[in-house]
Image (cartoon, rainbow, N blue to C red):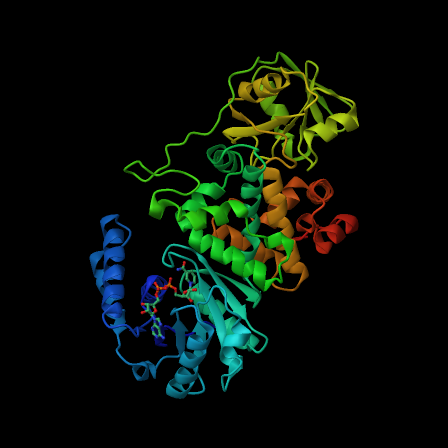
Amino acid sequence: MAALPSSAKIGIIGAGTMGAGIAQVAARAGYQVLLFDAMVGAVEKGLQRITQDLERLVKRGKLTSPERDVILWRISPVHSLEALAPAKLVLEAIVEDLEVKRNLFAQIETICGDEVIPATNTSSLSITAIGAKLKRPQNLVGMHFFNPAPVMKLVEVVSGIDTDPGIAATIYDTAQAWGKIAVHVKSTPGFIVNRVARPFYAEGMRVLQEGGADAATLDAILRESGGFPMGPFELMDLIGHDVNFAVTGSVFTAYFNDQRFQPSLLQQELVSAGYLGRKTGRGFHFYEHEDGRSPTLPATTEPGPRPGAVTVHGHLGVAEPLVDRLSQAGITVTRADGDGYLQVAGTRLYLSDGRLATERAAATGCANLALFDLALDYVKAGRIALTTADQAAPETAAIAAGLFQALGKTVSVIDDIPGLMVMRTVCMLANEGADAVNQGVCTAEAVDLGMRNGVNYPRGPLAWAEAIGLPTVLSVLDNLARTYGEDRYRASPLLRRKVFGGSTFHG
Ligand code: NAI
């Protein structure tokens, strides 16, 4: 299957945030666009926004003025649906309403004829349901862009029950011809990105609700240790709690109240108070500064004693790069047998496995036990989160902090929360991705491409889980499930199968 040729006219209905952005993408790729909107003046407003956006690119040297002019010339405003008759692909980005979209596509079928591909940018409606009443439901496909469409790389190509695989392939190739990264996905609530991303917000709010640390500290941990571009609280504040809470609620309901997607009471409180985030000046953070940035600083632990010597007992797994860093920092490192921990004076430091530090201290018989969190890259990470067992001596936190501070890292000691912050978030993201693969929604590659390019995660969750080690990820999930006794943390059968079969998602 090949992309639609650049001679094919593209009809875009809805010239709002998404429609205007998509028109810009198609025109920049060399396609003629017919842009329609039902509201008087909306197409002109959309064109104005496109012009301003292109102007910014010219100013930054990313586009020449003649290129800008050609792109704008390729977009023709039209003022009736009938004017879309020559279009080979008609993509709608109108109001999110099933009946309105159904009626629109019924008209498009009549106006544009048998060959047209009707495509929808819906985020939350079923492609099967939108297409069901059409004469040719096999032609209808989802073409789901991310906001802002000219910037975000991902397009989810969504197939309903009736979608012809050939049509989905054409749209996939067309999205690539438009400079995007496309992934195939079956029509299921949240598709890939809006489904797999739920734990990013949910685990953050869980840890906040349980008093692990404050929002600024948890944001900093996910950014500086997890490598995510933004922490969950600042990101939700940016998206708007009304929007984010509605998406979570709709995914939760769509999955018949599966606990994995359960909304948070904390966010409900913000929504009911009207604290919707940046746009209202207050969300999890306050935004009273002129630049709109939150002035709240993350909690950072005071300098602890610098260790002269550290014993590494066994293999540290994904945290093994710490060993070389310790030597490079001039600390004497000795290796010994053990189940994978660092020993400094009488304190043991383990990587979190989803159990409470307090439980682990009891299990190992070592009271002075600290846990450290997952980092995307232990060499580059600027911050590390730690916690200590309830039975630990008061100096345990300072001793554990001193070790990471000797490596140049900022340390945040948080309360004893199972799975700390980065580890539980990444394991839950990977688990959700694994379940999407298990249910035939998409491939493992699509999960990773989707999350890297739809929400700019630093690493695909399944590739990340493989880097951590799938047995470790499964242990974290099983320990969380046992500790909380909640269905929310049940491990995907596919993850368990990969662990016991000794294979990987990409192998
Ligand atoms: P918007 O409100 O910015 O724009 C919608 C435009 O459609 C408006 O200009 C409106 O006048 C026009 N419109 C409404 N009903 C119409 C009709 N029956 N016929 C023709 N034009 C009509 O909305 P936005 O944010 O661009 O969203 C559009 C679609 O894209 C929705 O389905 C939404 O779920 C989806 N989407 C939105 C994303 C976002 O972040 N805003 C991301 C991905 C998808």
